[in-house]
Length: 260
Length: 153
Image 1 (spheres, each protein chain N blue to C red):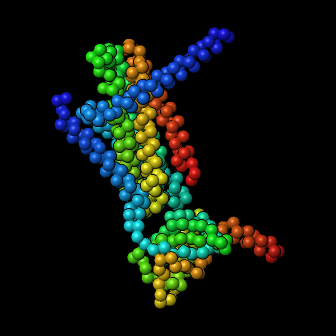
Image 2 (image 1 turned 180 degrees about the horizontal axis):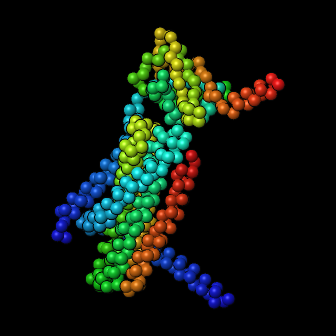
Image 3 (image 1 turned 90 degrees about the horizontal axis):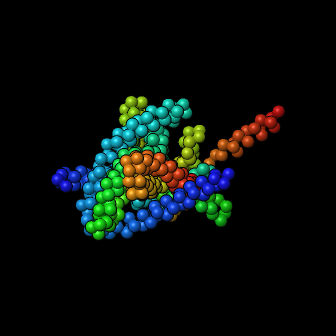
């Protein structure tokens, strides 16, 4: 019995300990942002590996999500004779929820895991310690540009996801199932608001970008410097990111769309 | 970095595509484009009951959308004052135009339909529409119908 409470206490303390280290890590990384501005080359390299390389998985997933959404939505809406609102349904669900959330989940799997593995391996091969020996702050030099790149890339990817998704929905809805082209776009424009819907979606994706990249970088930085440690850290990145995204999404949705 | 310039180009394209995407969302999907032409004139209409009318509900004449509801508030005579913004190109509405709140379809959203009258002078900024017909509340209509039915027996 005593053993149980001891374990519980230990794991609670360990969790808070990790949260505290993660917070200091975040502050340290944020303090490195001005230094990134001096060396934009570091940021561009990271934007390439975090953003450009995630481009295809994001856009292709967006296309298929939009197509499937349109296909399923059409059959349900057709029962009520409301096929014209298909555009609204596809665009609203993509811009408000699916765009930011699905894109963040993909981002965690594609870019987050890569970041964790990269940083973890740097730590395991003592490259980070080597930098410290040369009086280069590894958090400013390695972590800060990656963090900034994640925050910039995530909303861009989410916007592209939504755009391609709507086009995919249009492809299936209008070209395949025969919804009227004019009412597809017209109803969409009448029902969706730029600030309420699209801008809030972009804010969501920025928050997800911050959360996912933070988790990915910290798990990499905090990993046990062994091959097993790196593999576990990578797994934790994907799992914790998914929890963080879905939890944050619920909170943000109630804050943004709760009063409608 | 040996592929520095191609990388720069790709990152540039990536960021540019994001900006274009946001522009596309703003123009094609949301109603931001209809706000750019913000010119128009406003008229007020007093309704006994504004029903489910909302800000941005469409205002139409003969089924053509000519403007939208820009504000709804309660007047001192306990009637709803609905402010309507009409596009400038439709400035030839007679001053005895009547306004009624209709529902698009059985369960659709509510909109204001304007029925042009026959006067020679036109509605202008801040003028008032006198002849109005309130929204039909389905529950009220049903209640009256049932009441009549039971009274007939």
